[in-house]
Length: 360
Ligand code: 6CS
Image (tube, rainbow, N blue to C red; front, side, top):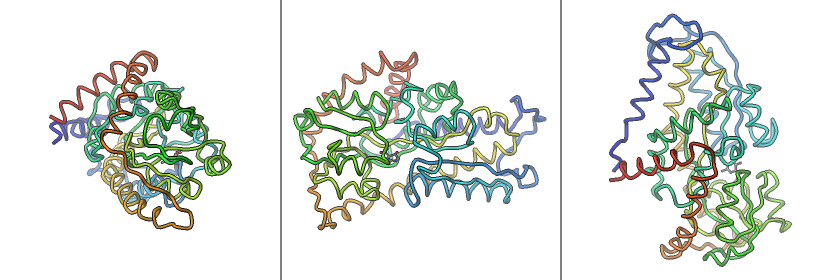
């Protein structure tokens, strides 16, 4: 049971109300607005853009399209959000740059692509940190002040405001050889996202990790440039990685975390009514994001197993095997504390305290 569940949500609603009080620098008159009190008459007609790291039908795209519909409905058709999929505006790292320079207003960005820009965001690369129970883990993402206040401020230094942190599911390993013990990772060419701490986490298992865009990954696996990768099951199936991988390990070594983000100056410059609608749309999408990933992850394993023309041997790690990985992953936390930015230690230590309290 999460003891503090609801506290941060309440604090966030307060901050929505406070933002709606006009205590910002956008020249509003201080009227106390709630999203319920706002209608299309209160906001200007605008057309914004949002980019995601995924393609049509995948979790981030379904999320972004529903977020756009929610904004449209809440504003009585005044706010239009055009959604772009992965590859339409560049690579994942290009998208981070476009958001931080306000070329686009909104983006779904995974911390795995911001590790050099915001080192504290490498928090999410730490394996075996969050509870295995995804619902609990999502509640922590929703409620943690270390994440939603301190880490958010670190992103805001780069003009990126994370409005919500959410999971796309537990990550699993695939390989061209079995991955069951740390020894299996010895010298193993593991593909990871860009963030240096993800690479470091695999070096802790003596693997030989390489950062690569997922756009190159199918071919990279097929041609043996890399031998394995990590992702939630829906993504492994939808990107067809199982076609070019012989082994899949249910490792649950980490959850995939992504963020709904907005350019900070753009967001702070919105009038109160418009910002109240944006905040309300983000809140309405919180539980939906969890449902979307559940819908897509459910059944993906079965479909991978049923694809007998491209057979994949599935193995689920025992708790003893997971413990061996957990022990090797633990020292990476100290590396994070000491090397990933001024506030890394505070963020991790506060988060761990929050998790202890919430899971009492
Ligand atoms: O592995 C990746 O890089 C991709 N995985 C997911 C679940 N979403 C987008 C990301 O770029």
